[in-house]
Length: 102
Image 1 (cartoon, one colour):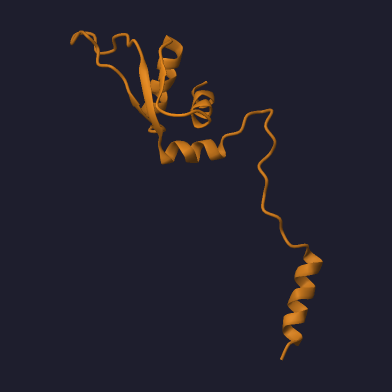
Image 2: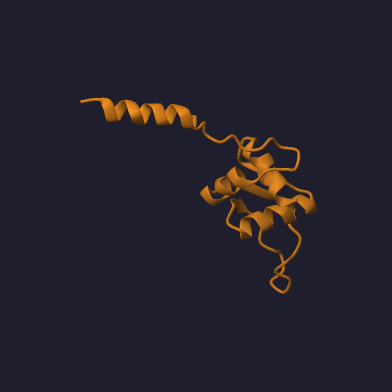
């Protein structure tokens, strides 16, 4: 899955180079979605623009890519931690304290 590769990229140092056909396809998908900035070689033949590439180099993850990563979780991941809320009784006593103050 392309998002797994994006997650891997976020944890590695960039630029990163990929050469397997499966990785190249995933990087092309991420690039088309605007999630990464990547260099892909131009096809050697003008008649076959989708020619095979030897390697793809990922230069950076875009802001959109970082936002997607922030909202992306795998089935085994822990749920996102929500900010702690004040207990209802603390909020009520604090409100009562401010009402009594002159």
